[in-house]
Amino acid sequence: MSPPSSPNVSAGNARADAPPTKPQPSAPALLTRPQNDRSFLYNLFFGPGGGATFAGMCEIIIFHPFDTVAKRLMSYHHRVVDLTSPAATWRNLDHVVFGKLKEHYTDATTGAVRHISSMERLKHMYPGSSYAVAYKVLQRIMKFAGQPYMRDYLHVHHSNVFFKKDTRTGEYVRGGRGAMTLEATAGCLVGVCEIVLLPFDRMKVLNQTNKAAVHSRNMFSVILTEGVGKLYAGALTTAVRNATGSFLLFGGTAFTKEYVFQLENYRDATFAQNIAASTVGGCVGVFFTSPMDVIKTRIQSQRLTDKMSGWQVFVSTVRREGFAAFYKGITPKMITTAPRLVFSYTMTQYFTKKLRGE
Image 1 (cartoon, rainbow, N blue to C red):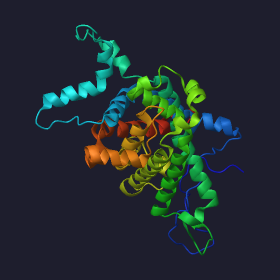
Image 2 (cartoon, rainbow, N blue to C red):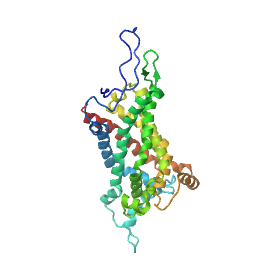
Image 3 (cartoon, one colour):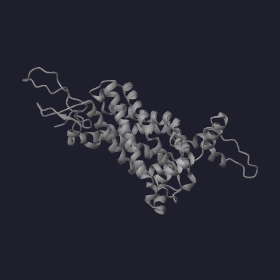
Image 4 (cartoon, helix red, strand yellow):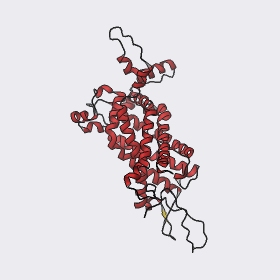
């Protein structure tokens, strides 16, 4: 028998022969199996998997340049902002973002910088775009398509952890905190699984921040010469960062839908409600994971022959730059990463409904 396609909450538990009582909503029903006889792969591709793919591709086109700026700021080991001189701050920012490009256009004898066209500057903002596409699309599929399946697994096998059982009916009764915790926990577990994509992420970061480290090599040649372990540098830091970020993203989104919009069925959220709810989750996640993101980026941007642990990067950063360094690039991240998560989350929901014809 095929379970319901869309309800996050069923109508109620009241029995016809029981005295009239206020119906209590049951625990959320399954989200990922529509009422049809199609295969798992069909429902995946013409559902959350396809929705996440389209959203990820659109995200790369729009937001990759901003991600490049944030990564270059986070991997820069000197102060950028000069509170006494906006002009100096702008020069520092220009050096961080376009310094490598200007070196390429600098005359070796005179030291003069030749004119750099707008197209060249734009191309400089899309380094490692092939790795970015592979990483981001696969990550979005795993995060936004995987989370509903993980959520359903936890719901089927571990409902007792999240919901209370009604002693009269024997069914699990939905509670606001239980539903939110289920959403957040499913996101957290899927976030940990994202470390399998770390080789694509490291190649992307190296192309964005330290292109000389790869010497125009592709990922497979790096694996053959350096070993696959080099591309998994910072795996523990990444796992902690992804788990925390996904927990806060899905938890914050569910919190907003639960207590602000008072939705019992989270899938009933309108397009605008999805934007507002994911904005809360995205901003909270980006802010609290920024220190881990800085450490992760600095581990990944070092040369392939270097080997600094997350703890060594943390100690070195505090000693040289202070704790404020862990929020380097927070402004472009809040301006771009949070909207990027909002965009991906909202568009995944939108494309999923369109693919299913809802």
